[in-house]
Image: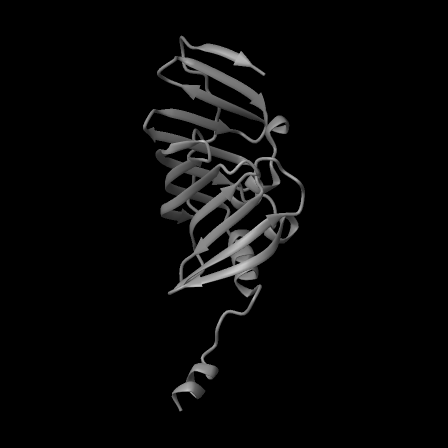
Length: 200
């Protein structure tokens, strides 16, 4: 009887978690995430750890506020990207077209469907968590393989990306707020006074 019950309990089949996640992402208009970012290099034993907040709005607008170990601000209004380094009092401005990545647009910027960008090549289950193993459909030197860890409700817990050189970047989601109402200033590019500006 015990084994019969196990057979009757519904489980997530191959590909279903991917489809559900894609639907969940399509329903998000705005996003706020408190995160921890860990970067591991194949040639260096120390892991670089950063903490901060990430905001995104469907259509390509985003804002990243790095709080630790050093303050840095990255803002995009959908046309330009501003990188502000308070310690150096310097700003770099570039066009969004020069920095496009389908992987980033699908997973972070809410701009592309997952199925348009990735092939699912695996699914790993541990306890109540599911990890999707994804491979970009288009060759991208910065993203060789992507691992998306989901909780039992299929919300993202972490995203790990690997490049061909062995560098691994993991972004852990500490908290997530969906569909909030952003202020008008959140995604607006404003140059701080007295800074050195470099346009690429």
